[in-house]
Length: 384
Image (cartoon, rainbow, N blue to C red; front, side, top):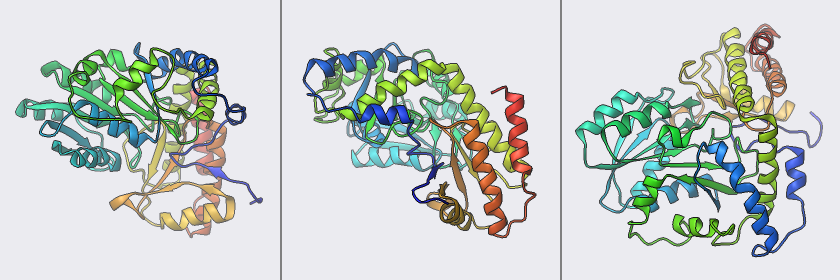
């Protein structure tokens, strides 16, 4: 590898487009000046299609977890009962946040690597009519699972008036998202995944039904108070100092997505998912999830005859290529490849080819080029 050469293929942070990096290097401006109001006025309408909403998308300076915590603290109070669907480490994070705020939580745990069944959630809610909100993860980063959010929203709202609150941190901007049509009440994402920015921003879109609940919520909150952000958004401002450099970058990232077209963005991510899965199948290396449950933004691989950590070390030391390992009980058992945001099929072909060489270096004798060929054939069939 060359000095300073890095290839980032983890499920966040993700690579930053050069034009976005350039935009973020603009001179600083006053955060209460007209220039900032103009910047936010430009950004606001361009965020809405990414979320699939007509609501203003709130922008907070903070990580994705700040958005998840804000979703909890603004909607439920101590003693309220909620259902948390846990399909991996980040579903569990919702549970941890609720625990910190003394929320009475019902956990619905799903085996890691599997998507939740909407019918199972429908049955659970029928038995627990006291539940006021359901928390779910759209893409479970730790496993590469994409949960069936449209179907979940449908069964939740068929029989209850509970809020449906979704963590979309590792997929919004990379997969089709129709918050209003589907019936999501709060949708949260972060800047450092499919949105093609560094860490430091969290976004939250809030439905009219959720605002009705939030406006009656008596829990005190300061920095994470959605009402403050909503009120200031109407004036093209923020209640607290915004992350201006990231906003410069956000404007450019949204322009790139608009130029490509969201439908093509989603197709590109789907193609990369199919390429990655075809490659590892060709190499006879097991995948953690089924095709139906797999996310277009991250692929989880569960080898049975070599050490994933040894592979990651060779990739990093010899090629400057970073992929992710497993979390919690999957640590040391899987590896994960991020293919979202500023990532193309060409980038994925490079990654697969390098992995094939690294497999030989860890003693896994695969036929060189076999995985790459499978990915190439998938790309040709996909038409990208």
